[in-house]
Length: 222
Image (cartoon, rainbow, N blue to C red):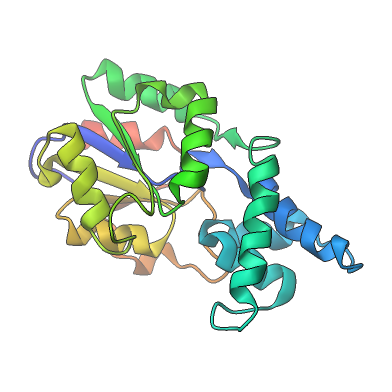
């Protein structure tokens, strides 16, 4: 992974830093039970949690974003999620230790997510992990969302570093696409949600990790 000296590490949020699948899935499942439909197990929702409303509504109702009722259902999902998004969401094991180790090495860190600030703001303010994050870029912070590189460029600007000095870690192929387009090194978080048919070996990431702390080994090799 050695290129320019690494001075910052950026992370996707859901499925990379936090396990929000229980609350995302429950928000969608409530829509089913409110309509008298049977509840679905969390295991059905978890693989698609990284896709947000699109993924959750796809599981709950088999609906695609181009359906006429999608926007109405999406706002209902958002309201459900907003009411419970801190109930069962937690930081993945190893993430707090990883962040402490990065800071001990003098590296800055931040977040680049497609989650809108409507949710990112309350989440990151409530979880102590994010007190030391130097940049938090949401899906609507810039005019573009991933896989466009602009959110990553914005994070680098906020950190005051060159994109070439950043590593971007995420659990979705669009994270790798965005990272490459921004000129950053990319690391696939294979412990994340990944998607139903994801094949991390085809994402063209610079590296993949099966647990958060494996990133430290990559940094030693850089």
